[in-house]
Length: 416
Image 1 (tube, rainbow, N blue to C red):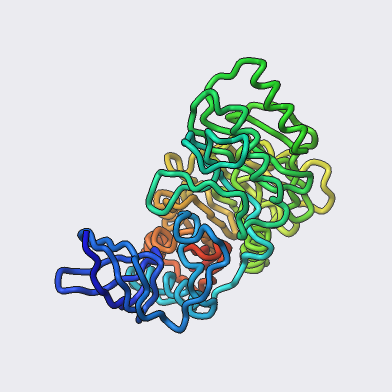
Image 2: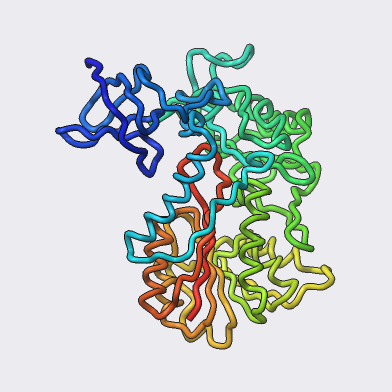
């Protein structure tokens, strides 16, 4: 494959540089607009060989694994233009469906760094710390299933210190099984919470070895496919006035600063509401805070999350009544007639959005809806459904808790 010179015109929505050629666009990762680069081209993909003419916006990456590891896409870009580009991802997604609300400047919400991470462990012939020469533990490589072995990650919060060492140790115990492992680690107020998936059934001696490793690394809890191996302390996080014991492997906003920013935007938008539906509630990221001012009805498909949310409300002074129901809102969305009497609703779905629920909201009489999303494209689709149903998207605030990535969160406010 021969290399060719390309001039990068602009960045695509995944953060790749795009060179316009007579044969069509060529996508070249790790490049910036205006750069002349040498790249090996295969169809519409290019592999960067050398930056011939660098952009003045190019900076030195903060991580030695950048460019090989697939975790970050944009460490090479200066902060100011990067933030403008991320906001434009939201502007463009909404414009494509004919919406042009007021869009606030991007809110940086990386804070101290990510408080949860998923490490992958795979068998390999080397490239591992001493004593772990049959393993690679780290992140998936760029556009590859190969694992980039790492011993440090600069985008992780200090509270995750020790997470990689503990993950290597756990993977070493399970290495003889030759199974691909996914190791989710979350920093909580009582220590690291780890859930390991992929090991298959284990004999008692190996479970005992895992428990020993968990004790040595002082994990708050170690679970395997959600089943308890060892718990020193219940893994707790505070949400408003409540303290939540996280279910194993549960979802939590990536950064503490990101959760705080999103929650502040949601609670401010819903400040006058007395009865609120919290759709896709999780463990209560918004609902537990909203309950300080309003009656909340929460709906979530995960039974352990619903249980954790309800348990967190018990004995907490100053909370208004909270109900919670296990409900798959993709298959069985809350119906328009079930929303009679509500002052407001908030929805925070996974990346695929909330199309079915949006259609029911559009048919309802709820006067105020707040949408939270980690994908501007699916949010725009759902926003268009709400707009067709008579809602006006007043304003949107982009929030950046996934620093150096092409992902952007947002909060949008709809009124009838």
